[in-house]
Length: 266
Image 1 (tube, rainbow, N blue to C red):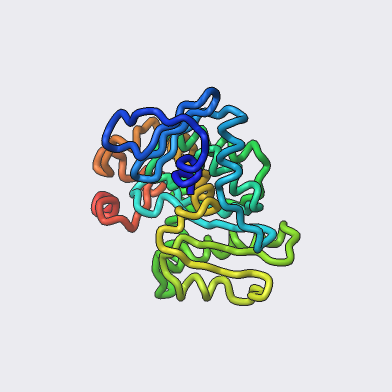
Image 2 (cartoon, helix red, strand yellow):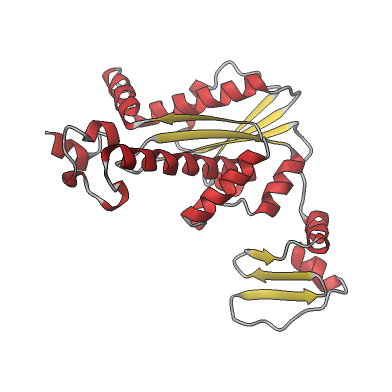
């Protein structure tokens, strides 16, 4: 849509500088570079922002759009973090202009920077940070009941979603969960008024701004927690393996069901 807008406007185009660029605009205070990948780089002048606001599609079907995501599931160290955000249509546009996108494409420093900017906007969100010690106890409880990690994650997502919904005033909301186990997640959301609450479980959910924002905040909390563990136990978890750590300390900094951790503790 941006490409079509520029091609039919009077904005002055500039020559492309490499094969990755789709178009380049430099017209007084407006500077834009659109890449073949869909990535957009722009200057933050009022003129440029006005163009982007006029093009980007806003959704007005719901009072809030919720997005739920987690981080830490795949790391043997650190916590499991689940975050749910609630955005209005205008806030979705605002965060897109801020640079909120799939956090897997972002560097850690940028994730931390944008997470802080999101939280400064007082956007409603709910989070659960399970420290390794708490995570290990819960995991064992679920395992004793014949349940899996997906059951634990569904519990955490469900709890965060319900707590955030209780804080909001709405007629209709849309909830998108980054999909991991549809049946377990549905079971945890039983009882919600589905006339007022539409639930979507989407693979690659970070393509939706509320989920992307949740992921960014979750990774911010994960990084903060890992830094705290490093300071408390004098470690550098990202650059260590479980075998480098005193086995007595591992249950407080690591997820003990991971095979490489379990082998050391044994």
